[in-house]
Length: 229
Length: 242
Image (cartoon, rainbow over all chains, first blue to last red; front, side, top):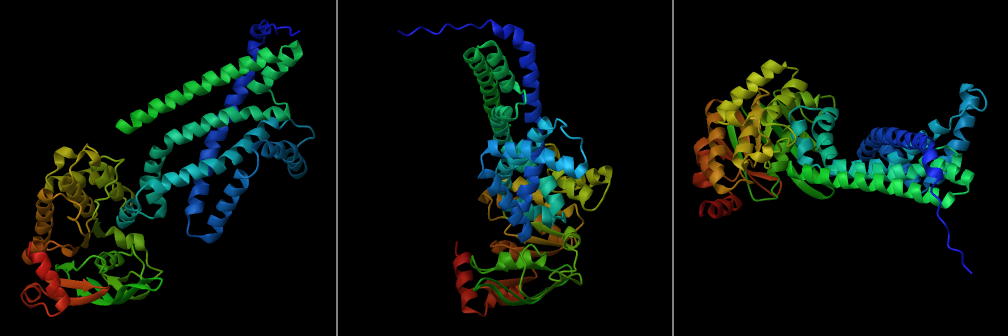
C-alpha cells in the first residue's frame, strides 16, 4: 500500500539565514554577469557588424561556439581548467577558492554570446539613415555609434536584455556542479542534511518562481511605459 | 566649390552612375532631377562621401572626396545635408539635435552651441518647439529642423536629397520657403527634387539625369524652354502637366 508522503516544512525557518546567503551569491553572479555580458556583448555585436573581416569572423565564431555548447559544460570548463591555468600562469597558491570568480567569468562569457545577438538585432533595428545623418554632420563612426545609434538600439532592447537577465538568474542554479552555495545549492544542502530534500526543492522552486514571475511582470509593465513614452 | 569629374559607380554589374561631370560654383543653386532610379540621389551622396564611387574624382572646396587620405568627417562637417526622411535623432530634443554635432564635432562650447541653435530655430520659425522631441512635430516642421541642424555647422554648401518627397502636400511649401530664402542669401546648393516650381523660381542651373548619366546640364531657362534630349522632354511633359 502507498503511504502518503508527509510534508515537513520545519527545517526551513532555521535555514533561512543560510538560504539568504545563497541568494546573495545568486544575485551577485547574475548582476556581474549581466553587466559584463552586456559590455562584452556590445563589443562582440559591433565586431560582428564591422566591415573588418577578421573581427566579424572572430565575433561570429565566438557567438556560434558559445551558443552551441551547453552552459553547464562551459561552467565546468571554468571550474576545472581556469583555476589550474591561473595557478600555473600567475602563481596563485594552490587550492585558492576561485569558484565564485570562475562562475562569474563563465556566465559572463557565455551570456555575452546571447547578449551580442540581442544587441546586434537592436543596432540593426535603427534605420540606416540615422548613421548617415550622423556621418553627414561630421561625426565619425565611434561618435555616431555612441551618440546616435546605440542609445536608440538600447532603448529598443531594454525589455529583451532584462528578460535575458531573468533567464540568467535561473541559470545560476547550475553552479551547483561546483558545490558553490548559491540559493539552489544552499537549499539542496539543507534538504540533504535534514532528509527533507522534497520540501526544500519545492520551497526553492517557489522562491525562483515568485522572483522571476514578478520580475517579468515588471518588465512587461516597463515595456508598455516605454512604448507610450 | 563642387567639382564632379567623370564619376562612375556600379553595384556589381549594375551601373548606377556613368561618367558624370559637372561643376557647382560658389553661390550657385543647382536642381538635379530625373526619373526614379536615374542615380540623382546617389550622385548627391557621393559629393560628401556617403556613397563611395569607383571611378573619377569629386572635390569640394579643393578637397578630394575619394582620396583615402582625406578626413571625410572633417569635410562633411562643413557640407550640410538634408535627407528625404529628415533623419532627426528621435531620442534627443530639438535643441539637442541642433547642438550635438556643434559640441562633439566642432568642439563649440555649450553656450555658443545653444545660442546658435536658438538663432537657427528662430530663423525656421520653430523656436517654441526647442524642448520637444522630433516625434511630436509634423513632417514639415521636422524637415525645417533638419535644415537648421545642418546650418548650425556653418556649412560652405548644402546638399538636399529630395527634401519634400516624404511630406504631405500642404507641408511642402514651408520647407521650400526656407530653401528659397537660403538660396537668396547666396548659399551654394545642390538639390535633388521634383519641385519644378522651385527649380523655375530659384535654380541657376538644372541637371537632368537618366540611367546614371547626366543628360542635360543647362541654365534653368534653356532647360525649361528647349530641353534638347527626348528623355528630358518626356519627363518635363509628364511632370509639368499635373
